[in-house]
Amino acid sequence: MPVSDPVARPFDTPERKAFRESVERFVAREIAPHGDAWDEAGDFPWSLHEKAGALGLFGFGIDADHGGAGFDDAFMRLDAGTALGYAGVGGVNASLGSRNIMTGPIARLAREEVKRAVLPDIVSGRAGGALAMTEPSGGSDLARMKTRARRDGDDWVIDGEKTFITGGMKASWFVVGARTGREGFGGISLFLVPGDAPGFTRVAITRKMGWWSSDTATLHFDGCRIPGDAQLGEEGLCLLAIMDNFNYERLALAAGGLGMARRCLDDAVDWARVRETFGKPLIRHQVIRHKLAEMSARIDALDGYLQILAAAINTALEAGEPLPAAGLAKAKFLASGVAEYCASEAMQVLGGAGYLRGCAIERIYREVKVMAIGGGSEEIMRDLAARQMGL
Ligand SMILES: Cc1cc2nc3c(=O)[nH]c(=O)nc-3n(C[C@H](O)[C@H](O)[C@H](O)COP(=O)(O)OP(=O)(O)OC[C@H]3O[C@@H](n4cnc5c(N)ncnc54)[C@H](O)[C@@H]3O)c2cc1C
Image 1 (cartoon, rainbow, N blue to C red):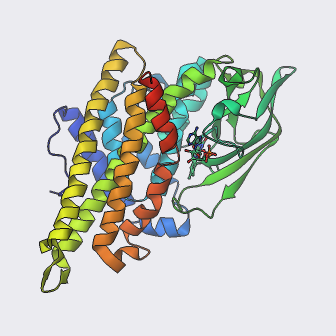
Image 2 (cartoon, rainbow, N blue to C red; image 1 turned 60 degrees about the vertical axis):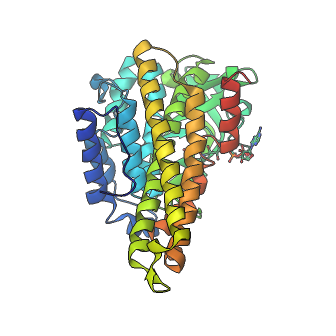
């Protein structure tokens, strides 16, 4: 049993255990052996999306009629995200997961015919999806979004630019935020844009610090014409739909951070057991043992917090109440902090071996940084948590 395994899973059920184990097997069989080569190649086969779809990784919170699971469970979301994070190939995780941050608004706001036409392909992994909110002028302050959509006869016409869009080169469908009215969040609407819409082009962002196997794009909307019914919900409802989406994105990123931190601890322990310095294994040196104990303590604390949070999310879902936004914001920055700490300490335990390309710790060390930025940066998450706490 890996050292990083949780001390207890008080909320486990046979269904959750079976799902978790199936995702862990999927990661071990389908991702781990290829992750490094895919990352170096900057790409991975589309068949992985379909295998992940068949496993049910994209169906939570989506009706069975629309190809989804027909139920939601925060523990299953958490376990899936943790197992994928443990693979230590963030780019694969990001490109698979980009659809999970755009199906929510479709499921919540699109007309029934649109849901039936679009969701099954995305949820099964046959088609890709991406969420396009961030613009070159900024991602934190979305209320100042500049991309505009205007009515032209029966159509909508979008002009503007989005950047850093995960899954953006391969996606067939995009949920795009654009201003249709007044300043601020209240004037922003969401649109469902097909990848082949006239006036829409995309350019790959290739020279990234990490997530090499993920397709990241800048999107250009140059008089991009889409049908009148492509608007998701009404103007101003964007905030409502997108906030829940952001909440789930934060849960997924926090889970991924936990998985990455666990991988760092396990790899550091494995190395410390076999590497000898000054006549004994590294693991017998007190300084190294203390590093491992500290990593383990932070991982356990994060794990415990995420389990409590998952229980709170499920309770909110059952009661039809808003998700615990403060808790999710705190989870996001706690997780990125723990992952960053563990990556740095693991690299130190591995020494030069950890610095080499091909070593999972080297990749995780580079990729923890985006966890502190994407999906709401650490600063914005702290600010949101404070506001939600009434401060
Ligand atoms: C690899 C990658 C993938 C991404 N994928 C997507 C995607 O799929 N879809 C999408 O829409 N976006 C995506 N993003 C964008 C991401 O969400 C933004 O990078 C993030 O929201 C921060 O926006 P920004 O980079 O424009 O930084 P800015 O908003 O310009 O902020 C810069 C820095 O200032 C800090 N800051 C800003 N305001 C404050 C404040 N009030 N107080 C204190 N500090 C502040 C921020 O925390 C940040 O550290 C991705 C980003 C990356 C790097």
